[in-house]
Image 1 (cartoon, rainbow, N blue to C red):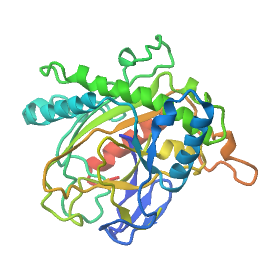
Image 2: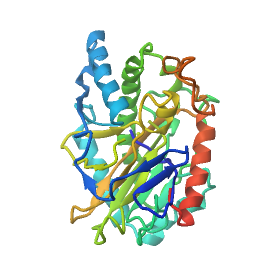
Image 3: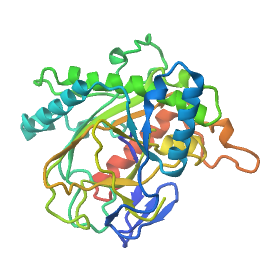
Length: 349
Protein backbone atom coordinates (compact mmCIF):
# COMPACT_ATOMS: atom_id res chain seq x y z
CA UNK A 1 0.00 0.00 0.00
CA UNK A 2 2.45 2.48 -1.34
CA UNK A 3 2.36 4.22 -4.73
CA UNK A 4 3.32 4.26 -8.36
CA UNK A 5 2.91 7.96 -9.05
CA UNK A 6 5.10 10.04 -6.78
CA UNK A 7 5.65 13.58 -5.61
CA UNK A 8 8.10 15.53 -7.74
CA UNK A 9 11.40 16.57 -6.28
CA UNK A 10 13.37 19.20 -8.12
CA UNK A 11 17.11 18.96 -8.69
CA UNK A 12 19.19 21.25 -6.54
CA UNK A 13 22.97 21.73 -6.65
CA UNK A 14 23.15 20.10 -3.23
CA UNK A 15 22.13 16.40 -3.38
CA UNK A 16 21.10 16.55 0.28
CA UNK A 17 18.35 19.11 -0.48
CA UNK A 18 14.98 18.04 -1.91
CA UNK A 19 12.39 20.55 -3.08
CA UNK A 20 8.98 18.90 -3.45
CA UNK A 21 6.42 20.20 -5.92
CA UNK A 22 4.15 21.30 -3.08
CA UNK A 23 6.86 23.79 -2.08
CA UNK A 24 8.27 21.78 0.82
CA UNK A 25 12.07 21.88 1.11
CA UNK A 26 13.74 18.99 2.91
CA UNK A 27 17.36 19.20 4.08
CA UNK A 28 19.05 15.87 4.68
CA UNK A 29 22.14 15.53 6.83
CA UNK A 30 23.76 13.49 4.06
CA UNK A 31 23.00 10.98 1.35
CA UNK A 32 24.09 8.20 3.70
CA UNK A 33 21.53 6.10 5.52
CA UNK A 34 21.22 6.14 9.28
CA UNK A 35 19.27 4.38 11.97
CA UNK A 36 18.33 7.97 12.80
CA UNK A 37 16.05 10.19 14.72
CA UNK A 38 12.62 8.66 15.05
CA UNK A 39 14.54 5.60 16.21
CA UNK A 40 12.86 2.98 14.04
CA UNK A 41 9.83 2.22 11.95
CA UNK A 42 7.09 0.85 14.24
CA UNK A 43 5.82 -2.71 13.90
CA UNK A 44 2.03 -2.92 14.13
CA UNK A 45 0.09 -6.14 14.55
CA UNK A 46 -3.00 -6.02 12.31
CA UNK A 47 -4.67 -9.02 13.92
CA UNK A 48 -7.21 -6.73 15.68
CA UNK A 49 -8.25 -5.40 12.27
CA UNK A 50 -10.11 -8.69 11.76
CA UNK A 51 -11.71 -8.68 15.23
CA UNK A 52 -15.50 -8.49 15.64
CA UNK A 53 -14.91 -6.48 18.80
CA UNK A 54 -15.17 -2.72 18.17
CA UNK A 55 -12.87 -1.90 21.09
CA UNK A 56 -10.13 -4.04 19.53
CA UNK A 57 -10.37 -2.14 16.27
CA UNK A 58 -10.45 1.19 18.08
CA UNK A 59 -7.30 0.29 20.02
CA UNK A 60 -5.55 -0.59 16.76
CA UNK A 61 -6.66 2.73 15.25
CA UNK A 62 -4.82 4.61 17.98
CA UNK A 63 -1.60 2.74 17.21
CA UNK A 64 -2.01 3.51 13.54
CA UNK A 65 -2.66 7.20 14.21
CA UNK A 66 0.63 7.51 16.09
CA UNK A 67 2.56 5.82 13.27
CA UNK A 68 0.84 7.72 10.45
CA UNK A 69 1.11 11.14 12.06
CA UNK A 70 4.68 10.83 13.34
CA UNK A 71 6.53 8.51 10.95
CA UNK A 72 4.38 7.94 7.86
CA UNK A 73 5.59 4.33 7.69
CA UNK A 74 4.95 1.13 9.62
CA UNK A 75 5.62 -2.58 9.36
CA UNK A 76 2.41 -4.63 9.31
CA UNK A 77 2.46 -8.16 10.71
CA UNK A 78 -0.44 -10.63 10.72
CA UNK A 79 -1.76 -8.85 7.64
CA UNK A 80 -3.53 -11.87 6.17
CA UNK A 81 -1.88 -12.42 2.78
CA UNK A 82 -1.12 -16.16 2.43
CA UNK A 83 2.61 -16.85 2.19
CA UNK A 84 2.19 -19.09 -0.85
CA UNK A 85 0.62 -16.21 -2.79
CA UNK A 86 3.51 -13.93 -1.79
CA UNK A 87 6.07 -16.51 -2.94
CA UNK A 88 4.18 -17.16 -6.16
CA UNK A 89 4.13 -13.44 -7.00
CA UNK A 90 7.87 -13.08 -6.48
CA UNK A 91 8.45 -16.14 -8.68
CA UNK A 92 6.36 -14.68 -11.51
CA UNK A 93 8.12 -11.36 -11.08
CA UNK A 94 11.49 -13.05 -11.61
CA UNK A 95 10.11 -14.89 -14.65
CA UNK A 96 8.99 -11.61 -16.19
CA UNK A 97 12.35 -9.93 -15.73
CA UNK A 98 14.65 -12.86 -16.53
CA UNK A 99 12.79 -15.23 -18.85
CA UNK A 100 11.89 -12.60 -21.44
CA UNK A 101 14.26 -10.76 -23.74
CA UNK A 102 14.53 -6.99 -23.61
CA UNK A 103 12.75 -6.84 -26.98
CA UNK A 104 9.83 -8.84 -25.56
CA UNK A 105 9.58 -6.59 -22.51
CA UNK A 106 9.73 -3.47 -24.67
CA UNK A 107 6.57 -4.59 -26.49
CA UNK A 108 4.75 -3.45 -23.34
CA UNK A 109 6.91 -0.33 -22.80
CA UNK A 110 5.04 2.35 -20.87
CA UNK A 111 6.11 4.91 -23.49
CA UNK A 112 3.72 3.28 -25.97
CA UNK A 113 0.82 4.65 -23.91
CA UNK A 114 -0.37 8.22 -23.53
CA UNK A 115 1.52 10.15 -20.86
CA UNK A 116 -1.44 10.00 -18.47
CA UNK A 117 -0.91 6.24 -18.25
CA UNK A 118 1.87 4.85 -16.05
CA UNK A 119 1.28 1.18 -16.81
CA UNK A 120 3.60 -1.20 -18.64
CA UNK A 121 7.34 -1.85 -18.61
CA UNK A 122 9.84 0.70 -17.28
CA UNK A 123 13.31 -0.27 -18.57
CA UNK A 124 16.73 0.28 -17.03
CA UNK A 125 18.06 3.81 -17.28
CA UNK A 126 14.91 5.33 -18.75
CA UNK A 127 13.40 6.86 -15.64
CA UNK A 128 15.21 8.44 -12.70
CA UNK A 129 13.78 9.81 -9.45
CA UNK A 130 15.46 12.89 -8.01
CA UNK A 131 18.63 12.71 -10.08
CA UNK A 132 20.36 15.51 -8.17
CA UNK A 133 24.02 15.44 -9.16
CA UNK A 134 24.27 11.66 -9.08
CA UNK A 135 26.30 10.44 -12.03
CA UNK A 136 24.33 7.24 -12.68
CA UNK A 137 20.62 6.68 -13.47
CA UNK A 138 18.38 4.75 -11.10
CA UNK A 139 19.28 1.06 -11.26
CA UNK A 140 15.94 -0.69 -11.62
CA UNK A 141 13.42 -2.08 -14.06
CA UNK A 142 9.71 -2.35 -13.36
CA UNK A 143 6.30 -3.39 -14.65
CA UNK A 144 3.13 -1.57 -13.57
CA UNK A 145 -0.53 -2.44 -13.87
CA UNK A 146 -3.71 -1.03 -12.38
CA UNK A 147 -7.19 -1.93 -11.18
CA UNK A 148 -9.49 -3.99 -13.38
CA UNK A 149 -13.06 -4.37 -12.12
CA UNK A 150 -13.35 -7.92 -13.44
CA UNK A 151 -10.43 -8.95 -11.19
CA UNK A 152 -11.85 -7.37 -8.03
CA UNK A 153 -12.68 -10.03 -5.37
CA UNK A 154 -15.60 -7.83 -4.22
CA UNK A 155 -17.14 -8.16 -7.72
CA UNK A 156 -18.69 -4.66 -7.89
CA UNK A 157 -21.22 -4.22 -10.73
CA UNK A 158 -20.36 -2.15 -13.83
CA UNK A 159 -20.59 1.56 -13.10
CA UNK A 160 -19.76 4.91 -14.64
CA UNK A 161 -17.79 5.50 -11.45
CA UNK A 162 -15.26 2.89 -12.56
CA UNK A 163 -12.87 5.07 -14.57
CA UNK A 164 -10.17 2.80 -15.92
CA UNK A 165 -6.63 3.51 -17.05
CA UNK A 166 -5.21 1.27 -19.77
CA UNK A 167 -3.24 -1.86 -18.91
CA UNK A 168 -0.91 -3.55 -21.37
CA UNK A 169 0.11 -7.17 -20.86
CA UNK A 170 2.76 -9.30 -22.60
CA UNK A 171 1.08 -11.38 -25.34
CA UNK A 172 3.29 -14.45 -25.19
CA UNK A 173 3.64 -14.87 -21.44
CA UNK A 174 0.68 -17.05 -20.36
CA UNK A 175 -0.24 -17.06 -16.69
CA UNK A 176 1.45 -13.75 -15.88
CA UNK A 177 -1.65 -11.55 -15.63
CA UNK A 178 -3.67 -14.14 -13.72
CA UNK A 179 -0.94 -14.67 -11.15
CA UNK A 180 -0.26 -10.96 -10.70
CA UNK A 181 -3.93 -10.40 -9.90
CA UNK A 182 -3.91 -13.14 -7.26
CA UNK A 183 -1.69 -10.93 -5.11
CA UNK A 184 -3.48 -7.73 -6.17
CA UNK A 185 -6.80 -9.23 -4.99
CA UNK A 186 -5.38 -10.06 -1.55
CA UNK A 187 -4.02 -6.54 -1.20
CA UNK A 188 -7.42 -5.09 -2.11
CA UNK A 189 -9.06 -7.07 0.68
CA UNK A 190 -6.55 -5.82 3.23
CA UNK A 191 -6.65 -2.21 2.03
CA UNK A 192 -10.42 -1.99 2.29
CA UNK A 193 -10.24 -3.20 5.89
CA UNK A 194 -7.29 -0.99 6.77
CA UNK A 195 -8.93 2.19 5.47
CA UNK A 196 -11.80 1.53 7.90
CA UNK A 197 -9.35 1.47 10.81
CA UNK A 198 -7.75 4.67 9.54
CA UNK A 199 -11.20 6.27 9.49
CA UNK A 200 -11.57 5.42 13.19
CA UNK A 201 -8.13 6.86 13.85
CA UNK A 202 -9.28 10.20 12.42
CA UNK A 203 -12.38 10.35 14.60
CA UNK A 204 -14.72 9.32 11.76
CA UNK A 205 -17.34 6.61 11.49
CA UNK A 206 -15.72 3.31 10.54
CA UNK A 207 -17.57 3.18 7.20
CA UNK A 208 -16.71 6.78 6.22
CA UNK A 209 -14.52 5.75 3.26
CA UNK A 210 -16.50 2.67 2.16
CA UNK A 211 -18.31 4.41 -0.69
CA UNK A 212 -15.02 5.80 -1.98
CA UNK A 213 -13.26 2.44 -2.43
CA UNK A 214 -15.73 0.53 -4.58
CA UNK A 215 -13.64 1.02 -7.75
CA UNK A 216 -10.34 2.20 -6.25
CA UNK A 217 -7.26 3.62 -7.91
CA UNK A 218 -5.38 0.47 -6.97
CA UNK A 219 -2.23 -0.26 -8.90
CA UNK A 220 0.67 -2.65 -8.42
CA UNK A 221 4.29 -2.69 -9.44
CA UNK A 222 6.95 -5.39 -9.63
CA UNK A 223 10.56 -4.20 -9.42
CA UNK A 224 13.98 -5.70 -10.07
CA UNK A 225 17.13 -4.08 -8.66
CA UNK A 226 20.39 -5.67 -9.91
CA UNK A 227 23.56 -5.72 -7.83
CA UNK A 228 24.58 -2.09 -7.31
CA UNK A 229 28.27 -1.40 -7.87
CA UNK A 230 28.21 2.39 -7.52
CA UNK A 231 27.93 4.19 -4.19
CA UNK A 232 24.61 5.64 -3.02
CA UNK A 233 26.06 9.11 -3.71
CA UNK A 234 26.38 8.20 -7.40
CA UNK A 235 23.38 5.91 -7.86
CA UNK A 236 20.17 4.77 -6.20
CA UNK A 237 17.85 1.89 -7.01
CA UNK A 238 15.06 4.48 -6.87
CA UNK A 239 15.86 8.04 -5.88
CA UNK A 240 14.18 10.09 -3.19
CA UNK A 241 10.43 10.60 -3.61
CA UNK A 242 7.06 10.49 -1.91
CA UNK A 243 4.12 8.41 -3.10
CA UNK A 244 0.75 9.48 -4.43
CA UNK A 245 -1.77 7.05 -3.04
CA UNK A 246 -2.09 5.98 0.52
CA UNK A 247 2.31 5.75 1.08
CA UNK A 248 10.64 14.28 8.93
CA UNK A 249 13.66 13.82 10.25
CA UNK A 250 16.83 14.94 8.47
CA UNK A 251 18.40 11.49 8.07
CA UNK A 252 17.71 8.40 6.00
CA UNK A 253 16.28 5.68 8.25
CA UNK A 254 17.02 2.07 7.33
CA UNK A 255 14.03 -0.22 6.75
CA UNK A 256 15.45 -3.76 6.80
CA UNK A 257 13.08 -6.51 5.64
CA UNK A 258 11.23 -8.34 8.40
CA UNK A 259 9.99 -11.81 7.55
CA UNK A 260 6.22 -11.99 7.21
CA UNK A 261 5.72 -8.22 7.37
CA UNK A 262 4.54 -5.66 4.86
CA UNK A 263 5.97 -2.14 4.83
CA UNK A 264 3.10 0.35 4.65
CA UNK A 265 3.45 4.06 4.02
CA UNK A 266 1.10 7.02 4.04
CA UNK A 267 1.41 8.98 0.82
CA UNK A 268 0.50 12.33 -0.66
CA UNK A 269 -3.23 11.76 -1.21
CA UNK A 270 -4.04 10.98 2.41
CA UNK A 271 -1.59 13.62 3.63
CA UNK A 272 -3.49 16.21 1.58
CA UNK A 273 -6.94 15.06 2.66
CA UNK A 274 -5.92 14.97 6.33
CA UNK A 275 -4.50 18.48 5.94
CA UNK A 276 -1.01 17.22 6.89
CA UNK A 277 -2.26 15.36 9.98
CA UNK A 278 -0.77 12.24 8.40
CA UNK A 279 2.72 12.57 6.94
CA UNK A 280 3.96 11.44 3.53
CA UNK A 281 7.59 10.59 4.16
CA UNK A 282 10.35 10.89 1.56
CA UNK A 283 11.91 7.51 0.81
CA UNK A 284 14.26 5.83 -1.66
CA UNK A 285 15.83 2.47 -2.53
CA UNK A 286 19.55 1.67 -2.31
CA UNK A 287 20.47 -1.94 -3.07
CA UNK A 288 23.57 -2.53 -0.97
CA UNK A 289 22.74 -6.21 -0.36
CA UNK A 290 25.36 -7.50 -2.82
CA UNK A 291 22.64 -9.48 -4.61
CA UNK A 292 19.61 -8.94 -6.82
CA UNK A 293 16.63 -7.46 -5.04
CA UNK A 294 12.90 -7.60 -5.85
CA UNK A 295 9.90 -5.75 -4.46
CA UNK A 296 6.16 -5.70 -5.08
CA UNK A 297 4.55 -2.42 -4.01
CA UNK A 298 0.77 -2.13 -4.06
CA UNK A 299 -0.77 1.35 -4.27
CA UNK A 300 -4.26 1.85 -2.89
CA UNK A 301 -6.26 4.99 -3.54
CA UNK A 302 -9.87 6.15 -3.64
CA UNK A 303 -12.32 5.97 -6.55
CA UNK A 304 -11.02 8.17 -9.35
CA UNK A 305 -14.21 10.27 -9.45
CA UNK A 306 -13.87 11.17 -5.76
CA UNK A 307 -13.09 14.80 -4.96
CA UNK A 308 -10.12 15.26 -2.64
CA UNK A 309 -12.06 17.31 -0.12
CA UNK A 310 -10.59 17.82 3.33
CA UNK A 311 -11.52 15.27 5.98
CA UNK A 312 -13.84 17.20 8.34
CA UNK A 313 -12.01 16.29 11.55
CA UNK A 314 -8.75 17.69 10.12
CA UNK A 315 -9.83 21.27 9.37
CA UNK A 316 -11.10 24.15 11.44
CA UNK A 317 -11.28 27.93 11.37
CA UNK A 318 -7.86 27.98 13.00
CA UNK A 319 -6.51 25.25 10.69
CA UNK A 320 -7.94 25.85 7.19
CA UNK A 321 -7.40 23.44 4.30
CA UNK A 322 -4.00 23.90 2.65
CA UNK A 323 -4.65 22.32 -0.77
CA UNK A 324 -6.63 22.89 -3.95
CA UNK A 325 -9.50 20.41 -4.29
CA UNK A 326 -9.22 18.08 -7.31
CA UNK A 327 -10.65 14.73 -8.24
CA UNK A 328 -8.50 11.67 -7.70
CA UNK A 329 -8.28 11.11 -11.47
CA UNK A 330 -7.34 14.73 -12.19
CA UNK A 331 -4.52 14.46 -9.69
CA UNK A 332 -3.38 11.06 -10.98
CA UNK A 333 -3.26 12.32 -14.57
CA UNK A 334 -1.42 15.49 -13.58
CA UNK A 335 1.17 13.60 -11.60
CA UNK A 336 1.68 10.85 -14.19
CA UNK A 337 2.20 13.32 -17.05
CA UNK A 338 4.53 15.49 -14.99
CA UNK A 339 6.50 12.52 -13.72
CA UNK A 340 6.99 10.78 -17.06
CA UNK A 341 8.10 13.93 -18.84
CA UNK A 342 10.48 15.03 -16.11
CA UNK A 343 12.12 11.65 -15.74
CA UNK A 344 12.53 11.02 -19.46
CA UNK A 345 14.39 14.32 -19.71
CA UNK A 346 16.64 13.22 -16.84
CA UNK A 347 15.34 15.78 -14.39
CA UNK A 348 14.12 13.19 -11.94
CA UNK A 349 11.19 13.60 -9.59
